[in-house]
View 1 (tube, helix red, strand yellow):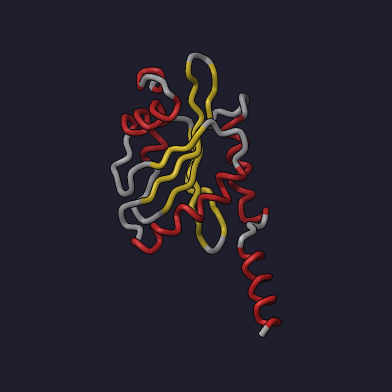
View 2 (cartoon, helix red, strand yellow):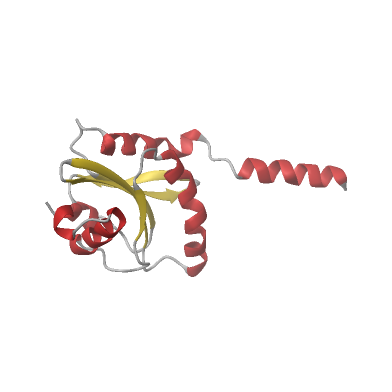
Length: 154
């Protein structure tokens, strides 16, 4: 019996760790978003086949809004310039077609990518299944950074 519990404890501890290879694409995408020399301003990743994969990346809030899909949980990052100073946010969006059971795991699944995304100024959780538009993104970004929507849309 004691051997069984030792085995379970070991498996539970191993299950709590995320291998670097599973989040490598996120680390690279985040570095590109944070780089002053890169034109990229956002990326979205999804969790698929027990790893995180880049779904989309781009240079504008328009592209960010257009690239969400209803069937995925999206883990991403965005760079915005407020008064010439860059700010970086982690972003979570759960599509409308994601099942209730999978929605419950989103908070757990976001831990690995968001922990790997060093230097974030905060986090945004977009309303589940909401329509993602430039205006809704700007509103949530402004709220997270304590600035005006107009400053985000510049």
